Image (cartoon, rainbow, N blue to C red; front, side):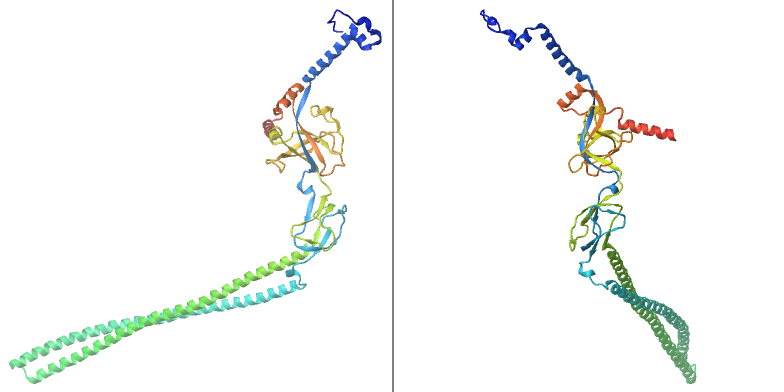
Length: 458
């Protein structure tokens, strides 16, 4: 059949019965096959010129845009034992409705008359500190009386010191006069004695001068003794003045010490009363914590504690409530390397679990069953899974999300980026290059546009 030999076998083959050989030998059929092959190759290469919209994909789940609209866990603020359940799973509750009641298990709070006894302790403590306050007032009055008495006693002692000081001055002058008289009498006596020795005066005159000298000497001695006595009185009065001051200083120090100790007891008692009142208020508030109520309207979706008599700890979860009304959103997790491509206001296409869809990420117009969303929040840190979370809200210009959506539903999303050719996108994907930035929706242009809008509004 390859005509490699001079011996042909065509005469031995019935070509009319073999369709493949007839088709190959037909020139018209061969041209048709060639055209189909050329058309297929041309179509394949022409598809590289088709427009393709780049995207960044991620997975996440449905949630609520506001934190208070997301599922909330109800926790017990105190240690206790479950006594009674008032609602069932799946039941609708309003804000303030009783969900569960717990009873006390701590020995400190088991006394049924604990509040009355604590109130009695507070009353007794108040009477005690009132007595301390009255005692402190009495001691303050005593201190004022001592201060007044000290002032009077010191004034009296000071007057006596000044009086003795004047007496000392008077006696000093008298002593000086007596000394002068004594010196004159002595001089006259000595002159009379010399004249008597010369025989010029009589013995009588000498004896008169001697008597006067002795009288002056006696007066001088008396004045000197009186002066010394006044000096002693003056010194004693000064000592008495210092003694009075020291005595009253000791009395005042003791009275002030007693007053300060009493005030210290008063303030300690006041602090103790404040603490007891705080404990009493805590007991009253604790009584309210035995009843656990719904924080808002919603449906109790799950009870974390079952049965009666089961103990709960402080901060332990008891039940989960799904808020009645919530504005649904989607939290989508993307790779950190794709975060620079996303900005607030970026358009995203979503596919929800349970809602079949035909997705063409590069041709969003040809996709069926997808829903529009807009990026509202982009986290500044990575999540626990190593990816960055973006929070999406429904796109008001697109058709509404399904009403049957529930929080926690799985979602897959594609953030729409730049428009490129399909061939370029395949080449980028094969080489692992990042997607192109959106130039017409860059964050800087968005900021400039917002500033311009603010100026126009002004």
